[in-house]
Amino acid sequence: MEAVMSSDAKAASYVGLGYKLPFNPEGWYGLGFSSELKAGQVLIRKLMGQDIVLFRTQSGKAVATDPYCPHMGAHFGHGGTVEGENLRCPFHGFCFDTNGQCVSTGYGTKPNPKGRLKVWPFRERNGILLVYYHPLGMEPQWEVPELPEDNYRQPLFTTFDIDSHPQETSENSVDLGHLSIIHGYEGVETLKPLRTEGPYLTTKYKMVRSADFLGLKGSKITAEFEIHVHGLGYSFVDVSVPAKQMRTRHFVLATPVADGKIQLRIGLSLKHLENRSKVHPLMALLPTAVVNKIVESAAFKGFAHDVQQDFDIWQNKTYVHPPALAMGDGPVGQYRLWTKQFYHSAPQS
Image 1 (tube, rainbow, N blue to C red):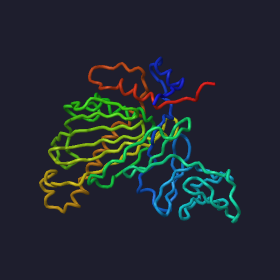
Image 2 (cartoon, helix red, strand yellow):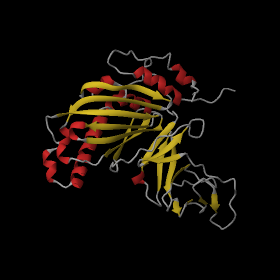
Image 3 (cartoon, helix red, strand yellow):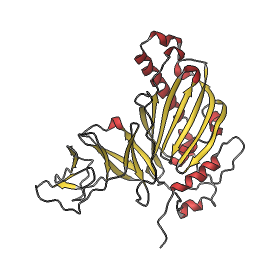
Image 4 (cartoon, rainbow, N blue to C red):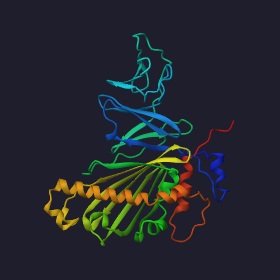
């Protein structure tokens, strides 16, 4: 896909310190996790400075819509309800189906066909609620993958509100230098060089880190991290600890909610352990279900800790372009060239 750069984004090539990234890159953005949206429930989420309403029908279909009723402007997130397969407005009782079509009024009269509710492009992928955003209103230009379950557990998750930008948070996936300085990882080694294919970016590393989060105080483990980035809002990392026969999936979802502000959702899913004694000898004394829960909780706590180590940097840094890169930084320049495709401007008249 050939992207049209905005004039502001083009200006980044000529500005050094303090350039402000456009806050609305195209992409798939996480607005929550499936477990947060029950059948019959209505939620309000923020994206690019506006509200989006999520609802799940009684049959289980999840939908994302504009917040305001096209009849007379009531907000569906404040009193709106789900009736069967439809979303009901709290003001006049008008009902809309999952395609945004008004199917009934509150008075039993014929709906106005012009009163159509905007429905956003929406996907549920591996327990994540995703909405596609394009600044020019275009339909999805690409998709995120549905990952095979492969005996992985349902993810644990949490959400942080921070002052940053999705390009900044995703850049950490290629910033090799910070892995030792910020996170204390040792022996960082690239196993697969960075590769891009359209909106997809991937690479793989090996490193040594503390095993404290597994209750192994003072011990170290070698882990392999295979990174998969789909646009600036959706990333997951396949993590393998061969010595412990342990695998996890780490989800990182950066959603712009306003200019300079994001909601960062992270999730972790553990692959069911086949040999629990490999993690810790005492684990063999406990039921497998209990061990899975303990290990997943510990791994998620360690993941959340590592992510939070970056917060002070993200919230207080400025964007430097071009960066004065040095040997050991990693493929930051290649990453930044890849990000340009997600910024767009209206065609010139």
